[in-house]
Image (cartoon, rainbow over all chains, first blue to last red; front, side, top):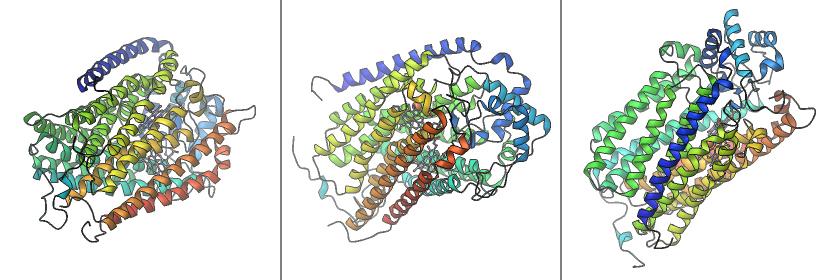
Length: 141
Length: 476
Ligand code: HEM
Ligand code: HEM
Ligand SMILES: [Fe+2]
């Protein structure tokens, strides 16, 4: 690097750039938070959905599945499973695990009650109605 | 400028212990490095378990379901890297500050607290169902569990914060009372940033979009933000030591690299805000800024090669130099090239959450953070053991382990990339897409190859450990 470009110039670019872009990020975050009510389906964020999200978390579903494309890649995307399979299939499926089919990827049984299954389905329905800019590309997720 | 230096003529192996250490308290780094390597082995074992479960679905089921193996794999990764960063901090901050560590005793207490808390958490993952772990650790009081990479019980997270604070206090006091260098300032900024952004792991709103939005403030702002500062500082420290290049030059590079990191990387967070419910403008901001994120990684490569080419001494620790150069190259490939591959919104629309993501995650984490920690260990461990460098025989073994692990990781990445492209093609393109599970069946050939490459990686890791026990004659 040229000798005219000194270390203190570099340092100033670093501090100036970091502060400027962090503030810009905070401003964009602020704007995003303002815009979310129209997009994030919060109107349907009921008590039941809240319970469902907790079940989703405390059974570590994200350890095998993706949700809106984030998580693990071992098992299907569940952000649109409500549209793909419907509520009854989802509940029956969770209850029937593990399949025990030799060599097939296995999902544990979480011993959920019927009302817990309803909570979980409510959470998946709520998730599926978030405005994701048309992702995933098709119903297979 | 003189072209040679007498520094290499210092006494080598065989002298009384610790003559190599400028400050005795640097010795606390040693257990941190040893723990890091031990946990790394655990990480890879669970990676191999999952790799098999990808092709033999019921392997170890129900004893170790996939999600449990995955938590163990990724959490061990994070924890061993944190051990590595802390060891690096305890080693380089006293040397940069030109004084003893504020409190070596506190550093050792923190070490045991962190190790025991980490071990208990892993045992918890393996011993009881996750829901039970959540219940007995009081997740209900402050639910933070069950999110990717942040699976630790809330009390473990609190423990991590306490350990990080004692560590930061210890180092900050050392820096404040001593010489302040660019390297130590950048290291401290990175480490403070690491702790501060981790606090977002305690924020878990009911609203899924907000949850995801701020989850990335931990994950992305770590690996594409503050961790790069830590990485830059560690690399700069080792390069100063092994090349003898003038500090002014190294520090100027360091500032330019980390400036580019934050200028591109902060708004670059937007590449995770394409499809999670956030406004459409993130597709523009996220694509544009993250497309520039390879620049700081490319500069990291240039930096390493430039400094080594301009070296003013021949350091006897050739293995450390190899690791430093390797970090430059592999971080650029893994983060820069494989990151760029899927970072533009129209591409990411198709690749989001596929094996493409996994391929990039592997090479980036290995190439940047695993390798920079090993670079530091490779440089510091011989000194901590009382010699300037290991014997030639030991270094040859270490270099073999470098090539085995690195080439294996290149192949893991290539096989996952192939699987990912096919996955996108079969599952997301065309008029008759296959289901997820049907697609996975089609990909098993590539998953077998990945597992084979994983076994080679594991062999390389074991060889790395062997290199610590290869004695050989003192350096010739
Ligand atoms: C023997 C070698 C390894 C094997 C077989 C292996 C296997 C795996 C598997 C199967 C997953 C889960 C993918 C999924 O969610 O479906 C995973 C995740 C992950 N592994 Fe490894 N792994 C290995 C080594 C490593 C190494 C050396 C690193 C880093 C230094 C690493 C870092 C990660 C990360 C960051 C994730 C999460 C990826 C993501 O969320 O995209 N792994 N690994
Ligand atoms: C050393 C630095 C980096 C590391 C350790 C890293 C690691 C990771 C990991 C583990 C994930 C998966 C996260 C998850 O599980 O959801 C990920 C995702 C991603 N990374 Fe990186 N990354 C790095 C740098 C970069 C850079 C420089 C770029 C862009 C040029 C990039 C682009 C992306 C994108 C676009 C995704 C989202 C993939 C998806 O949509 O599924 N990364 N990264
Ligand atoms: Fe990112």
